[in-house]
Image (tube, rainbow, N blue to C red; front, side, top):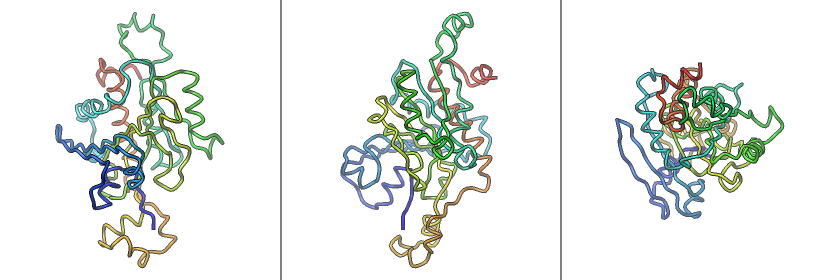
Length: 291
């Protein structure tokens, strides 16, 4: 049986033992529980099935609730990301996922809420008093089945053309604990393998393959049936194969209110990214510029 999770802290906790080369730190800010997992060695990464890098997990209120009061939380979370990206230079934001599948639409919907500014000339920004705007471009490249092109190929080509200082990748994640659906945000500087959480892993998108820092951010939107079964019935992982069929092993579960979760989750992630990239603008000003 395969236990799927994109969440580093779940992978670490699932081993039930301390791993050399993994450092875990916890803190709380404004009722946000923040856990930082640092994978320092390849050996440790192999045990967690995670590349070397930093993973920040943030527990948030359920994203199907009102997010009007989330602006201060967005600023806190953007502050946690700020050390991962260069202070200056254009940024490429990429929303991964299949917009035809609700649970996989987090990336594209987030991208639609990002303030793109690369096309605005300096003359116009100076006239409008927006000379501090950072150059940002946004894309939702779709998936291989829709385009016939690997997402990594599209992003790499864009990087070669527009020369961003880094790229921020937004994607829907898989978790192993159903309580994390719509309640957890993970940020990482280790890059991303699209589709890995649902056993459909594509070409890696990371600093090594892209040549620039790659920051991933996302929210768990699915969990596999094996993990749910193990949590509910407290069955040992090694014994689950005696209780669950092979066909069920490949099924995944999502939230009943997934439409609302994706809509509001995308809005919140966009708020975080916009706050990160346009520090001198309020959320209201950003929304006005996008209207």
